[in-house]
Length: 186
Image (cartoon, rainbow, N blue to C red):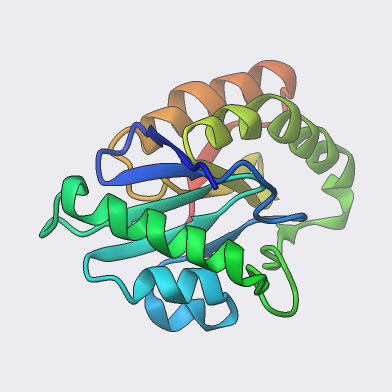
């Protein structure tokens, strides 16, 4: 198995591309080892010293390291865990896949929310996935869109600027009802 790696805008995060589907539907973001118990792959990665976060996308895995280690020491170990996992045939995530958190939306805003999600899915998510992350819609109230950044984008120094200057400007351009975008943590 050949696994490509790519850097991300977040220097503490690398993107691993195993050349196969990782998550058939949705994404999974694990901010700590305790949260990763439903994913044999994420749990095995957290067993490595220095792994601080694991994000599973459609065809990639992003791993965020702690400051203590450098990539030269950690990267070969991560590659070994990924190869071993896929060779074993175990599931990436046991049970339900994907992120299914509740959304805060007023029923009368359904049309606006549909437009927001369409723009996020077609214009924003592909670019964010290219950087090893994801952006998840969390709600819309009183003109404010609430989004959650995952994977390499979570904790990235430029994520707030991306939301404010990129995503907010685009949404405001196409949907006049949108007045602001806020980043929320889950």
